Length: 442
Image (cartoon, rainbow, N blue to C red; front, side, top):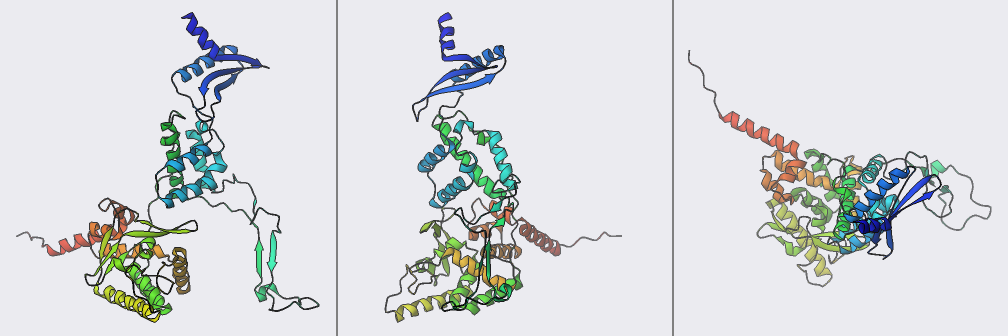
């Protein structure tokens, strides 16, 4: 017994430094760096120091201490290299790490990332995505030396006059002013904070499995609540104006907007469509893949739910798609090349061998709606398709299937609850209208 107590004292010592007592306990070797690890705490009470040493030795014996000094940055880098995830999700995690996580606690030892630290971090992001802490700062355009305010004057073409340009009114000429502006706090959305939280939880969960730390503080950390979806589809009148404006620009663009409106497809699904996915005779369109941009690369991948789905097409849409196919075949004849089933439906290239750029499609739709004075975005057409179907009394499971929602309609119900309620009210009125209340005889 005395020998065991002596061994415990050898593993932990108390040394006096000025008016305080520092407790140092040996905790093994770091599995990454192979360096010795020590647990340290200080107190001004010598008797309290003995209690601290006993507690730290108990933590080491029970393996309830951090096994490494590796930083959160190292842990996340290793997790990203081993985690099986799609490239788009990986790119999002890398961006979250670079912009938010590493500046906040990337250099902290992973064992010091506590539940309190995470909850304070989420609170800061809810106030300001830049975590400015209320400081008045200037948001510079670049980190290089520069003038904070530069006027780009509009000059006539050609060489400058010998005596210089005459003075002018910048507002009248439309000269462009570029300047660094004061920082304005923009909170991060709850949905984005939750995605960041899930990334952190994945990293810390991996370090628990690897034996670096003993528990995952992100499991019990409180994250923002899931925001209630607020879809804002265009009205029927606005949808008609949007369709007219799209066809006024060109037939291919009108076909694209029409197809999104009647099928409710996601942008990535729409751009990945090939002619082999369209069966005009059977009036069926098959959604098999997504087309997305990851960094500077374009890739095709599975759909969001990793499931293909088949969408029935109405006669008007079949006519629209047939005309669209004829236009593609005509371009191929003019170029003296065969029309291929593997060609994309929507492309800016003559032979449709590459899809339209996703961002370009979104910006073009936004500009068109702005010119019409309609506040809308491309994804709102998906909302339009869903809400029109639900308002018409189409059952929830069918609508969920067309949208590509999994869970038997749970997602559809959560997002479009207001329209489901309207459909349910109409169903109640229909049943009530077919019933007759019996009259009481007198």
